[in-house]
View (cartoon, rainbow, N blue to C red):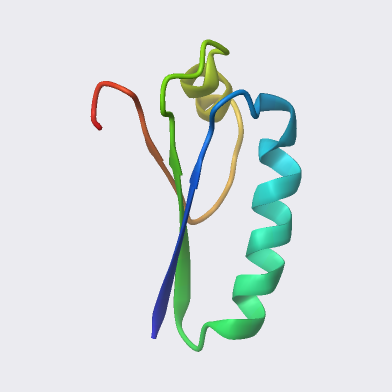
Amino acid sequence: MKISIVSTLFLSQETIPEFCQRVALSANGLADESYEIILVDDGSNENDLEFYLTTNFDGVIFIGKNEN
């Protein structure tokens, strides 16, 4: 079973790393096979895409405001 966790990024640049770590720990305990974390930039004015591209999170998908 694959688990998908979806969250918005509005003004959350400082909390993204901890959020991803905590979700990954929880998902690893729940998913038999794999998981994905989907982060949606819903109009934040913080450079969330730039920040996301400079970090390394396995299993994380970023959806920018041009895509939603």
